[in-house]
Image 1 (cartoon, helix red, strand yellow):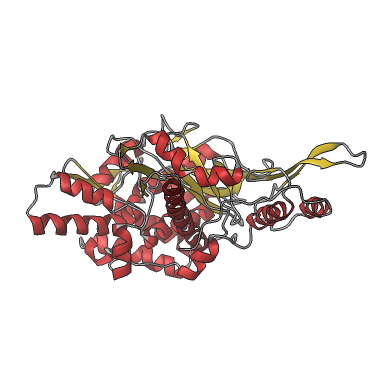
Image 2 (cartoon, rainbow, N blue to C red; image 1 turned 60 degrees about the vertical axis):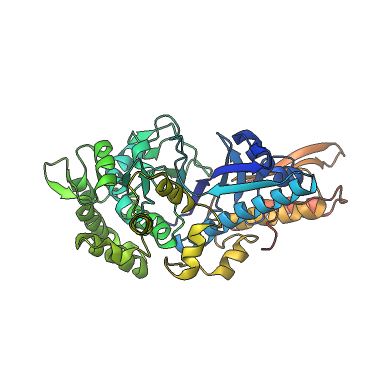
Length: 461
């Protein structure tokens, strides 16, 4: 089945003025002033097909446009980081013009200093025939053990875990996303033609800055779905890899990637061995370069020398940084300076950028492609049609609303001269054009321009 993929990222935010720190709602309101000024809302779809908005808890959130491949998604996610960073710079400029100096800090992580967790949610287009309970049962082992190849890592009170989300996830399957925090969310919200599609909404992953880890996170699961979401049903070999207690295993693996886990059939295998088993099953459905990276990471972990992949696996890169700093400065494992360094690792435009510029961590995406993705949608999905619609309304200035699958023009004159709303539903995420939408844009173009309109466009660096 052809798929679309996407990632939603919630960012940590703090803001400080000369007189002190802003509250979370104040910081969020100040950050989103440029967006509200352009869109009259803190919830905006952008020209590149993505969505920028304020989430529950005053967290800035960016959802990538629909993408066709893991590599395409990698570029789109990196563009999202840059959009949020440039928004902060623009909000600081506006505050300075108003006579107030505001300094923002944005973090691509999953846990704050108070223990609150916020997510990185992955989305995969699957067929309506896929049973989510069956999917959750067969994917649980993979999602529990996937942290060994793409976890972000966290140092908390002297203990290092390889995943930030592991201690905050509880259920295998739930319709909730905050209280229960499952591996998979069951809310039936396909954001597409519900007779044909489902949206697999995955809550189990960490937010990644290190691109090879982000690629592994999404690319490996996309490959595994080719074994699960098929006309003939799931590959029966996946059932042999089910864990006896996925919830307990999730937290064990976070503390020791080599720990042996009990399977439902009584066998005991390590998380690394279970990842290897999934690799052997799914390799035929993944890009060869991704398979090579996946295998190389598992080889290093099997040999007990994760440092071999410190430039490609985020938790290894972070642990190396923390251990080096602790050793040089002769610090205790629970020294507060290590916690500060842990947090600084995730700051947009901060320490990680320095490491990447020095070549200490690897980059996959082309900077020019990322810059283009700030303003243009990825090819091959309905993000192209939505972007074309947004460009058209920017030209005419007509009042409109947009969501993932619906484009609406308000107060469009009918044949009798009376105004009415007209909507077009883009039910197929794989369709790049819509004849009905083209007709709507043509009708709109024939009308007089009513006002200057525009959207938040990230300024140049």
